[in-house]
Length: 288
Image 1 (spheres, rainbow, N blue to C red):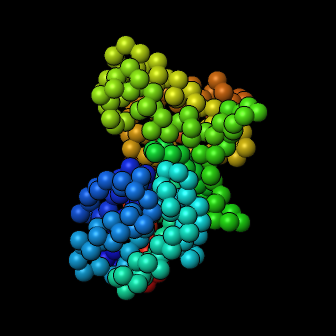
Image 2: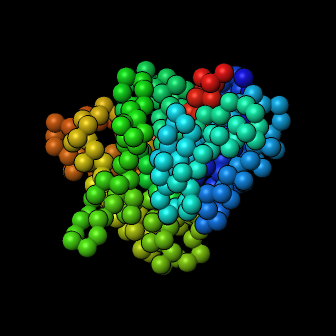
């Protein structure tokens, strides 16, 4: 089966062809999320139409997704006017092929279970977090993604790591790649991308900002470790390709957790920033 796969993030839409357990013809297109959900779906249709002779479509997307109906249950201000979008229905009507729609981090988790970390180590239980425009999470138990009562289990970006009487301090407010870039731009305005931060990490003040950001990542991970006692945690998103981050997390996590939890294995996604594309490729194949 030849499947067009898209990963709709707050910054870019990644797309490609998934066929015979192989991912090819990958391209990136700016999301322009400030233009809202209807614009993004039209952009997705144009991207899909640029591929030829496909049998199904797989969509990984930011937001909480009813994966049975292919509807966006809720999306925050990272993508305006996206809540309620009937993605599956719109794309099936447009292209007359089966369409699978899944939350982006759940898609990453599926990709890692079937083709990545789970396949390599035969691991069937792990937590998965991705760091990008926001922060998302997924829970994998016995090889299956735990969906929860409303398809929204694993919303780790909204655990509270800082709180006061005026405002809840959600995890992603302190740990998204967007936040890291914004903090570094205060001293280096020319910084535009996450990888730019690490190319400039030796400049005065940059490493301190990065290390403070990693501290914030650790606060959330420590809470999750104490709640779930996971054997493995997979960290995804383009920023996690930077070895300095994973190395620092591994070196410093034990100072934040009880000694009885220190056997947790923290790794970056085996499939890298393409994991969600692999995941929805697999899910679309189940719809044939």
